[in-house]
Image: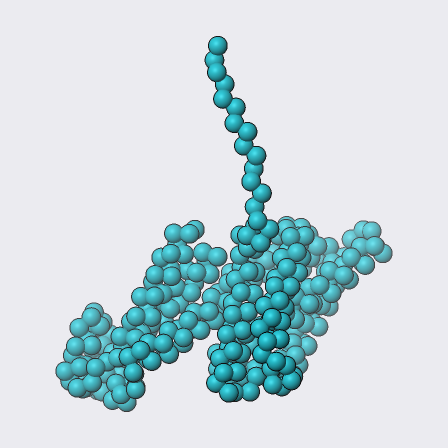
Length: 86
Length: 217
């Protein structure tokens, strides 16, 4: 049971991370074109301050980004609980 | 004189259901997930006004509320009872002993499965994936029961093992090694996708999400 819990948790966590990165990649590519795509890989830690930049530049709060972030945290909690049960 | 304190500790008998849940966790999780998916999904569709099998078969909602939990409970009892009869090693030996029956049943299962899937209304998207998964495991379980019956008849007729192939034993070993983690991964993936979908819908509802940020791309 712990194994399935860990699988579920990690899929949610990694899946949310990938979606957040795609969001970041698309925004960077829109703002800076091909250079933005390359930069998005180099500046991956920019994920932390990215929502704030997106909000300032686009004038829209990145709700999708935060929803996915929240789901990722839920996944991490599931994985953590499942690891303790092992 | 030393005083000896004798405590009489009789081992407490574990509850039947709890014992089985603890012993067959993956089986319980699978059927629990499928039950919740079917039960909650049908209820939501019913109250939203979409067509469900309740209307299709002319059943009442009261019948559904009782019949579905009972049906899944019976399935769980049967599945855990069958599982309790065989350990991993015992089952492996059975596979080794009956190569012909195993190969014939495997071929029949693989060739017949597409027809079984095409016969059913699977829906779309993630629901299609879960409905297909349910059909695949139910059909696999039924085929397994038929295979057990054939093996039992075969053992009664031929007392000694007639065929023994090394390549076949290796394939059985490989399947026994790869199938359990693969099954857990597929089950985990489906549950994760469903949780993702439900949480997303829930949070989108709470925050009145309109998708405005995604429209910027």
